[in-house]
Amino acid sequence: MRYLPFLLLLTLLSACSIPLKSDLPLEQTYRLAPLVATASQRLAANLYVSKVTVSPALDSDRIVLIKPPLQQDFIAHSRWPDDLSSYLHAVMVDGLARSGSFQSVSEQMLGKEGNYKLLLRVASFQAEYPKDGKSNAAVDIVMESSLVRVRDQHLLGQHRYAVRKEDIPISTSKLVEALNQALGEVIAALLMDLQRDL
Image 1 (cartoon, one colour):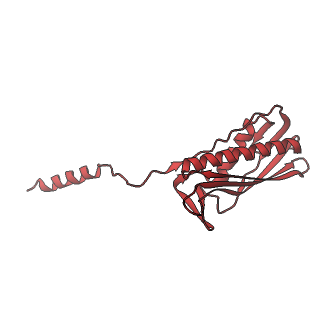
Image 2 (cartoon, rainbow, N blue to C red):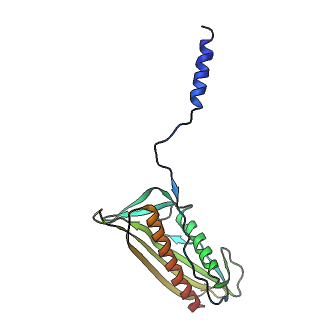
Image 3 (cartoon, rainbow, N blue to C red):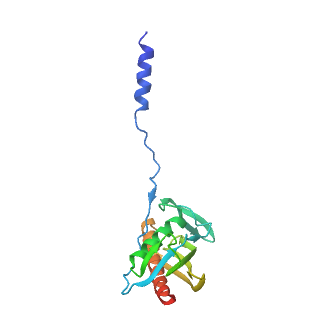
């Protein structure tokens, strides 16, 4: 009888050491790695990419899904590595640097001579569910850019990019792949405009 409390304690401790298993699906983190063509010539310009401005409704680490008629939701158990504004900033800096189009691409202002500031604003960056719920989905990116010469704060150019991909199978990996392709097209168009503006 005097061993009963000891046995109960051992039973409780062994029960606590059994790992609990959840039936919930695991969170999946998705990453963007848009293809960027290498430039044939490098401009003698240092490009400072300011923090990307993202519509407040989109600025979280959740992947936005628009459902008909105009309901905003998120793709379940799917995330970006960071809030969209921070994550897109890192992706854009990396993509522009990989292009080899500039003497340098930086997240910080380096000085005034030969330096340019790129301002980016994202109005759309989402997947869109089909209206009938049966056909394939779409993705939509809308981004605006402004290029400013640091020396005198002169605006050199403003551009708007809108890329839409349709007929995408309803699968998170396929939708992220389509967003990745669309972002690659935006970066390609942006690079062409930056080379013309500089």
